[in-house]
Image (tube, rainbow, N blue to C red; front, top):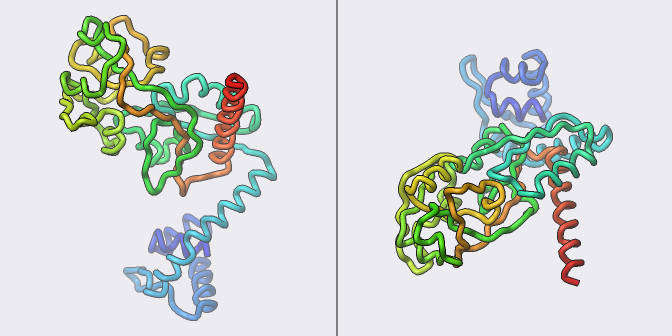
Length: 300
C-alpha cells in the first residue's frame, strides 16, 4: 500500500524506490502483488510514462485518507510507547499568546522533556506562509483562520481592540473612538499573501455603517507599521496587549469601539498533525482550562 501511494506521487519507479529505500524491482513486485489481489491494473506503464488507470484513480481516492489515519495511529502508539521526542517547531505571530506563551512552553516542556521546542516568529504580511511550507509544525496566531487544510485548535485568549495613533493626533486625547471614525483618517495598509478575510477582520475596508476606510502607506512587518504610525503616516487598529509588549513614547493607544475582540489560537496543518503537535495542543488546552478555573474562582 505504501508503495502504491508513493508511486501515485512520483509516477516513476526509480524515484519511488529511492524514497522507500528499496530496489526498483521490489517496487514492481509490490505493485504486481497488489494488482493481483485487486484483480486489475492500477497503472499504465510504458518506457516513457507511468499513469494511473481509472481503477487506480478510484482506488487512490478510497485509500489515501484511510492510510493517513492508519499511519497517524501507528505514529501515536509509537510516540506513546517511547514518549514524545524529537523537535517541535512552533511559530508565533506578534506577542503570541501574550503572558500565556511562557506558561504554555513550560507546561509542554514539563510534560515532554525529551522533545526540543523551537519558537519562530512569523510576520503579519504572511501569517500562514511558514506553516504551509513546513517551516513550523504549529502556529500561535490571530484568528480568523478559515482554511480547509488547516485545523484550528484551542483558543488561548481574547482581547479588545485599540487604535494606534501618533502622539499629538486629535484622537490621542480621547477616552475612546468608534470604528466609524476610521472613515475620517488614513489607515496603514499591509502588503503580503495573508488571506483577504484575515485582513478584512483586522483592518476593514469599510465601517459597519458602510463608509469606506482609506488604506495607504503599505508596510510588511509590525515594526514597520509602528514606525509609519509614529511618523504620522496613518493610524491602525491593534490589540490591547500592544500597550504592554510594544509601548512607544511616540504612539498613543485609544480604546476602539465597534470592532470585535481579537482571538489567538493554536493552528496546524491537518495533514501534518503528529504526536508532537497533538501533545502541544493538549498542553494548550490544559493552560486554557487552568485559567478558566481561576477566573471562575474569582467570580465566585
